[in-house]
Amino acid sequence: MPPELPPELPSDAPHPRGLDDLYDIARLAERLGVEHATIRVWLSRKVPWLPQPDGRLNGGAVWRATTLEGIEMRRERGRPGRKPKFVPAASAADVPRTGMIPVVAAAGSSSS
Image 1: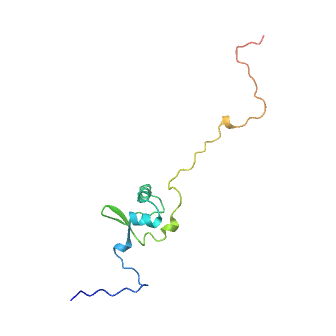
Image 2: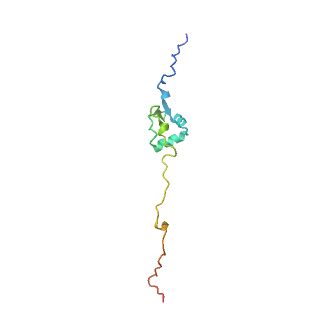
C-alpha cells in the first residue's frame, strides 16, 4: 500500500516555516537584483540598511524572511559608503584680487 500524501494546503494559508523561511546570499542577491559579491561587500562595509545575518548555514550568512521584510524600501541606491567629492577650501591664491598690487622696493637697493 503506498504512503498517504499530506493534505494540500489552501492557497491563502501561510507558507510553512523552515528552510523556505531562510535567505542565503544568493537568494537575497536575486531578490535585490544584484550580484552575490555585492551582498558580501555590503556585509563587510556594514551598510546600515542591511541587517546582520540571523545565523550561518554551511559557513554562509542566512537571514529569516521576517528580518528582511521591507528591505527593498530601506535600501539606499548607489554605492554604499561612497565618500563625498573632495572640494578644497579656497586659498589666498584663488581669491580674486581687486586694485593694483603695490610694488615694494627690496631693502638695501637704491634707485639713484
